[in-house]
Length: 140
Length: 101
Image (cartoon, rainbow over all chains, first blue to last red; front, side, top):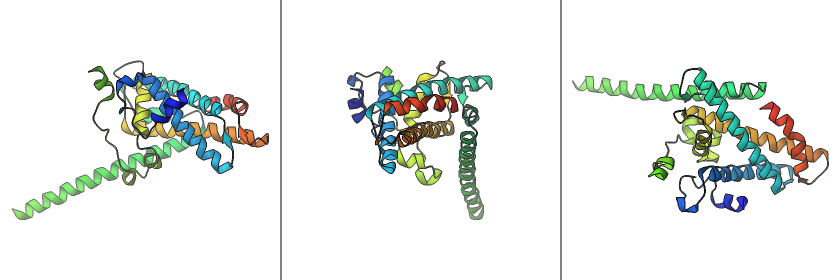
C-alpha cells in the first residue's frame, strides 16, 4: 500500500501540497516521497544495465535510506551543537561525510563550488550597486 | 493552524539550474524541500535549523547513498548472473554499504 501511496505523493508534487485529510502523518508522506525517488533512481540505473530491480529491493533501499537519514540528522545536530551553533552548516555536512575518503573529497569539492557561486552572486550584486552609485553621481 | 505552520503555503525560494549549475536541482525541483523536511523531522531539538547550502549537500549525499546501494546490488546480481536484482543481492551488499557511510 505504501507503493500505491508513493505514486501520488511523489517528489514532483510537493509534499506540502497535499491537504491534511489525506490522513497521513508527515513522516509517512516523507517516507513515501523517499520511496518514490529511490524507485526512480533504481529504474534509471537498471535500464542502463538492462536489469530490473524487484519491488522488495526498492522498498528495502528506501527503508535503509530513511534510517540512514535519521543517523545523519542526529549527527549533524550534534556537530552543530558542538560548534555552539543552532544552524547546521556545510562544515557539519563535511564532517558527516568523513568516513569515506572519496565521498569526503566529493562533498568538499561540491561545498567549494557552492561557496564560489555565492561569492560570484555577491560580486554581481555589489557590482550593480556600484554602477548605480556612479550613475547617480554623474547625474549630480 | 498547526498544519499551516508545519507545511506553510509559501513557495520555497529556489535557485535556478543556471545559477547553481547543480544537476540535482534540475532533475528534482522539490528534492531540496523534501530533504530539509526529512532532516528537520529527525532533529531532537526544535530550534535546530538547516542552512540552504547544507541542504543541497545533504540532498547530494543521500542521492549518492541510494545510487551506491543500487549500483552495488546491480553488481552483485551481475556476478550471480541474474536478470533481476533481488533482495538477497541487496542483503549481501548492505553491511559494507552501511560501514562506508
